[in-house]
Length: 168
Image (tube, rainbow, N blue to C red; front, side, top):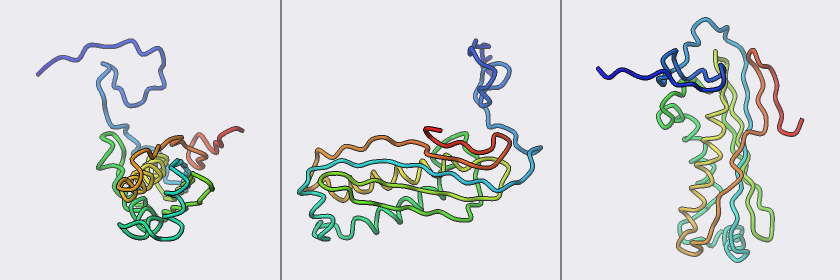
């Protein structure tokens, strides 16, 4: 078995590393179960004509908003399958909202809720990301220049660290 070298990290807050510097899943078994919530967002920019096609439901692959919403919900439920050190969580609610912002943008907001020992930030961010990727997939035949960006946590609540909000 290969020996892992201890790496200097510059911080003691890297909880996904063991004392030798190897990746590990954090042990949350001693933490109390508490309500947790997270909200993440992403934006999708495209040609104005593409947004018009989406809003008029004339994209050849179908209803872009409905499919992206379902994809985001499914992705939140599978976050631990996609992100190696992410804990599987029994999600209680996932909401994915898509808002057209003419002339050329869709804002995606995903929220996740759970009663658990660890937070649901990764589930919310995965939902927003996959909803954005789904918009690209459904529209790529008409606009290969679509840009996905600004995937970020907007807020989280619950757990020992309490509430955090972007910008405040």
